[in-house]
Image 1 (cartoon, rainbow, N blue to C red):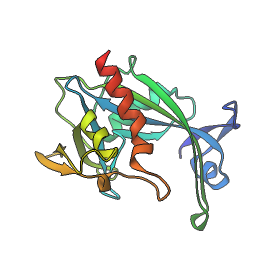
Image 2 (image 1 turned 180 degrees about the vertical axis):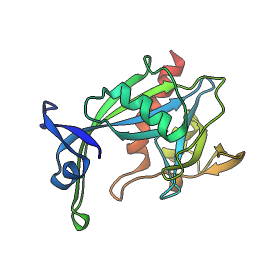
Image 3 (image 1 turned 60 degrees about the horizontal axis):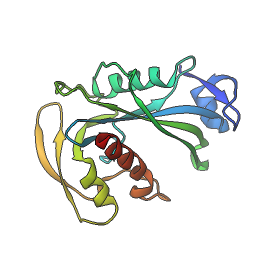
Image 4 (image 1 turned 45 degrees about the vertical axis):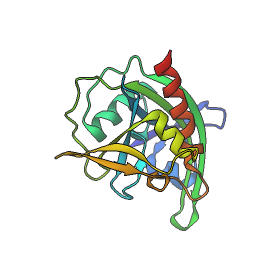
Amino acid sequence: MEHLDIYDEYMNKIGTETRDIVHQNGLWHKTVHCWMYDDNGNIYFQIRADSNKLYTTASGHVLSGETVRDAFRREIHEEIGLDMDVSCAIPLEVVFWRQDKPQKNWHDRAFAHIYANKLPTEFTDFHFQPDEVTGLVRINAQECLDLLMDKRASVYATKITANASTDIDITKNDFLVASDEKPIVKYGFVLQSIIQHLHI
């Protein structure tokens, strides 16, 4: 059973609880959103197994006793099969995330730590966690930002699965967002940050 460190609303640690109790009681905890990009200006979205929508490269809870970078490394390894050095991972922002599903007695209060790291250029051998991820989509970051800003209707991308790589078109409807979110709000800052970093 997973245990998570819990915090007050000012991010001061106040204890440890099981993951189930954390979500039943809406206790503040840490998560990590992992983003991979490459030197060619591309960003990598995972294809969620449960929705077939595009989301972070990998993501998950920061377990009790883990650092955010430890969790970044673990989630990248678990979900897409990449074992990598994350000492140079870039912290982009911390989002205070709140979501409730009363019908399921589920309450989320998370400090979502958003980090980005460059994908090694020689790495092409992905291994996906089948119950979480069915593949990756590689998209040019600037073109993706233009799409989410309604400057274009679709973008060319590459879908990477365990067996093949195929060319596809992506629209705004392909991105995973909550009912009260917009893709540009959820993903725009990450895209802008990676574009800016690539240009430094």
